[in-house]
Length: 270
Ligand SMILES: Nc1ncnc2c1ncn2[C@@H]1O[C@H](COP(=O)(O)OP(=O)(O)O)[C@@H](O)[C@H]1O
Ligand SMILES: Nc1ccn([C@@H]2O[C@H](COP(=O)(O)O)[C@@H](O)[C@H]2O)c(=O)n1
Image (cartoon, rainbow, N blue to C red; front, side, top):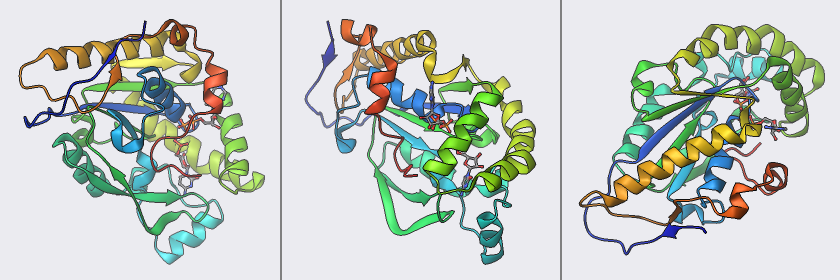
């Protein structure tokens, strides 16, 4: 039986959200894992503004490029896998506002133009659980220390490359030769230098990504336990509703069917 619950909003201050970091190589399945966790917490059909569990992507925080860098990016020669490609100031500012329980605006990134969409922002509303996913979310100590739970999605490199090629061509408007060139000269070396070493910071490593429903089920149960404990603490203000137990239907969830309806993490249009 599904055991979601709701409580009327109170005037007491909301607790600091539970912040989960999800790292892993490109196309390892980070956003799919996050989406599956959100679905299993019963949050998938909930309107963005009403969600108790939200997910944001580090991709939203790619920094603006200079005209020369932009030209290199068009040729697949700009290193988007290096820590310098991100706007860490904005990441920290945003995560601090999120942990303070405040709403905030974040950029919307466009992979086709390699730039933020001008004049477009996504609004993040306060939530009880915030998931932040990206290749380098564990790279800096300052960001790493903000997470209450750290997950690393560990998917075989060949599988990731195969998915990446398909995704970049079909969703990101890229050309096969440039995808392969970018992967071999920039993505793979940067993964080995900057992303893979951060695996040691993870509390839980998820082999095979989103197909690992056992790992995802355990993580979901842990989040439910935390939310339940928080809801029982004095002064708790519940914002929305969340499933505290998996329904029999969810227990039998057919992952492949659910993924067809899934939407990516907030502000990840491809
Ligand atoms: N378990 C899986 N089986 C098949 N395809 C998958 C699986 N996980 C992810 N994908 C596909 O691989 C691509 C990359 O997945 P995604 O979750 O976006 O990875 P990441 O967020 O790590 O870049 C997407 O096209 C996604 O649909
Ligand atoms: N303009 C851009 C920005 C990023 N990338 C690549 O995206 C990867 C990170 O996103 P994932 O969803 O795969 O985690 C990263 O490996 C960058 O190379 C890009 O190609 N173009």
